[in-house]
Length: 338
Ligand code: F6P
Image 1 (spheres, helix red, strand yellow):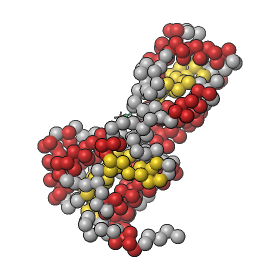
Image 2 (tube, rainbow, N blue to C red):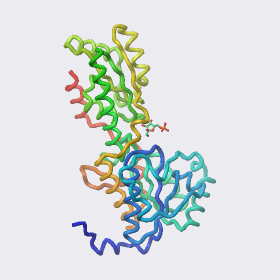
Image 3 (tube, rainbow, N blue to C red):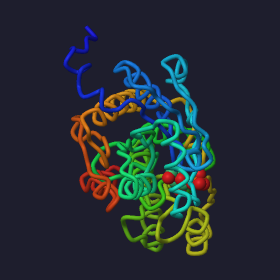
Image 4 (cartoon, protein in one colour):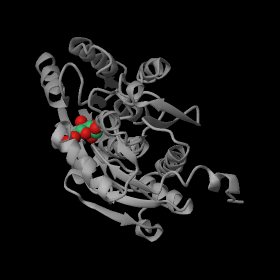
């Protein structure tokens, strides 16, 4: 039974009367599910909610509006973010942050839920230091690069989108005995590449976390040919040290012109689409947790999941370093590619 005990309802909720919620940085599937959870949890606890459009930029431009339980109907399945998103250059300046503070104060906003990536949490940290506005963060990025959570919101959907594309490319690669280089997103974090590469049965996965040796790559592709592999797929993380897929394909072709190579850059298709069940549950779970953390008087922490348990990481630790790739996954990705 979905029963919330009375003591949860009573938790300190008198202390906060109005919570602002915004999405910031690159959008990611599951953000809407999370916004919905924030709004409904606050409403459940009789706290007002203010929607802030386009992240910090919307605060500066006073693009604020009240959100109700019904404002977030029919969004749980939608990709993108109804609150829109932006990377605000103005918020980096003290004048921008002052304006943002004045606007949210005038709207009665006393605390914030920030759904975004490391830039968002850095901005939230400065904002708290300067103006004392408590912020709880939710990791919303397809890159899965935040320390303190096993998964960020949108990563699962993005990987599934990438794998769907890789599967399709494999069909045509096999028909023509071609070598495909498929570039995936992730900036300088190789999560999308590693997970989609293993799931898509890639012959090689090139990651920013490992030094890329193009000559060794050619040797291993040649060895594959000798073992009767007629087509191959190489997944390239966009932030690989040897360059993007286009550049690496050129280098491979110059070392071994006989390869019939093609390049596909998956790009922003990975950022959109209906969130998977995993991302809907993650967004819902972290949205509820964020509001309840603010009610307990917490701030400057990111909600996440570690070993499927809710976890809390201070912003300064969440943004200090990337989560390292699992060495076991790196190892078996190579075993399975023979
Ligand atoms: O951080 C998410 C991400 O999609 C990265 O994987 C990618 O490098 C970047 O954002 C693209 O940013 P933009 O949408 O501004 O081009």
